[in-house]
Length: 143
Image 1 (cartoon, one colour):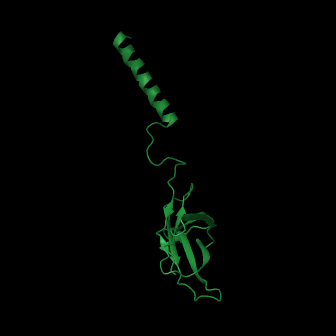
Image 2 (image 1 turned 90 degrees about the vertical axis):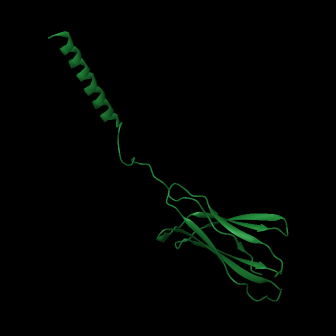
């Protein structure tokens, strides 16, 4: 065997060895990666009811209802934070709710009616491994 033929044979063996090695470790793999996932996008809404007539103490009540949803369905058993901002008092508060089977949560507030109340509420879902984060629009105290 002459020298050139020997070098070509060695080079061919090396190339085949590299190709087999890359194939075994998965280099050059195409398509989606196993185990990698992107969280499903969610949306979060808040609805505020009208105020009830004042009771004997002068308090009215209203209800804030929220829904955590995905395209074509709801997201149950997830924690949502409801942030209340009360500018007249200079404070804010955070409450946590777990969505029910229908993806909803609800809270009722008793308040003294005020013509200039600017209290507002906004909900946040921070997401998890399965579902992506979302934020609701602000809703304002109706009375």
